[in-house]
Length: 49
Image 1 (cartoon, rainbow, N blue to C red):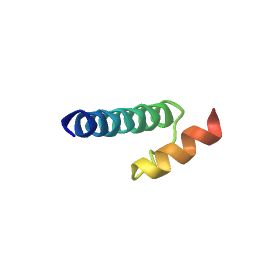
Image 2 (cartoon, rainbow, N blue to C red; image 1 turned 90 degrees about the vertical axis):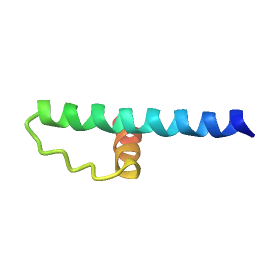
Image 3 (cartoon, rainbow, N blue to C red; image 1 turned 180 degrees about the vertical axis):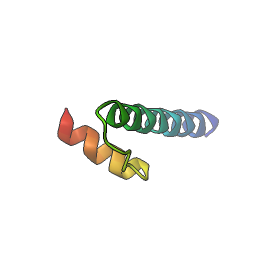
Image 4 (cartoon, rainbow, N blue to C red; image 1 turned 45 degrees about the vertical axis):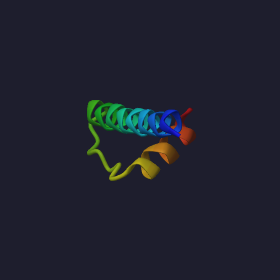
C-alpha cells in the first residue's frame, strides 16, 4: 500500500513538473501560459508530441 501511494505521489509531482515546463515553453514562445491545470497541460502535451 505504501509503495502504491509513493508511486502516485511521484506521478503527481512528475505531472506538475511537465505542466511547469510547458508553461515556461509557452512563455519562451511569447505566449501567456494558459495551462491552468494538469489536465490542460496533458492535453497540450499529447497534441504537440
